[in-house]
Length: 297
Image 1: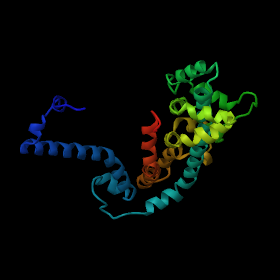
Image 2: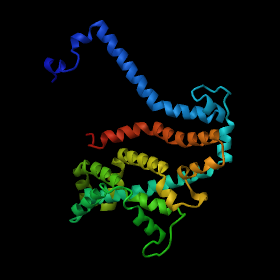
Image 3: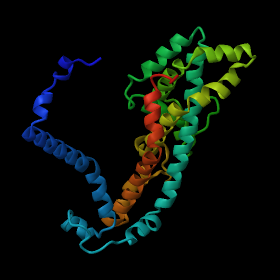
Image 4: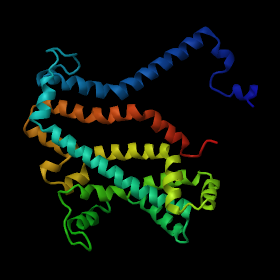
């Protein structure tokens, strides 16, 4: 229960807040801070959209002017046709979907084994997974590349194939830890009742655990897709063929073949899709984050 003493523990007391000058000053400060956050967050994206529909001369000479020479939708058409953004966009979607499926399969099964089945060696495996989070991503880059160049056992190269991106993306320790934490919060009575009814480990996983975990799976899916969408270094190393390169790798090559206006249009197309994706699924994302620490009764 909140007491009067707790309510007065602030920079400005409730009595001062009721005074007109103080109330107006606080409102002005809130408006200024909010406007600054909006400009810092939305300003660069808004300018990119404006530059995507402006001429190169307008972007260079009058960068803050609002379409001084009119709106040029041809920039978007040229980015799609001349810049071949369509093929790169398709490659990016395939890479993102493949990384999502591979990551969900590995993360959910690993979290299920560690959290629900709990084998004797589970503690060692959990410690090993957590240890990988402290390794900088650049450190295993060379060993991973050598593995992709010549895969063990099969002795074949995965360069210029989507598997070179999908397989490393499946081993995501962070997502495994997040899903395991959610599985730990599930009521164990459900699993005990399912075992009494004769359900095996696979049926418990597919019919009980996964349906209850849809919020956290949505969060992990969104994070995985966005991470795959913006990944640049690893696709640059393993996808050297332009026909299979994603947007992040293909965009820098446009500087040699297209104008600045077309480049801005291509960048706008690249940025808009993750933003729209987040806006569409933001409710599921926030709900999953809120439920990641427990399950509602």
